[in-house]
Image (cartoon, rainbow, N blue to C red):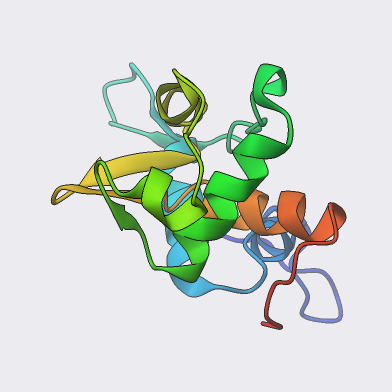
Length: 136
């Protein structure tokens, strides 16, 4: 149940903050909600929403991480083994695994893709580093 104030606005800013974090992208917002759900051990089967976990770029790979993430966004994912060709340079050993552990990318159907929960953070990281990103 969502409580409203006298003006009909939500009292708790959780959903507004979540929408801002997802850049207003509905599927990214749903993925963030899914990652924030915790089930209580109570008899009534209560479901709680926490704040989605913060995602961070693995620091040890520097700009190479951003180049890979940008390529994945531009190409809507890349086949496993083709990331080097898309970048026209070797991908540092362990980079994709580190991005996967950070929940920024995932392998689906034989392709590396930006994860649904990582998408908003990836856009922020790339925009902050002056990479071109389209307007939402």
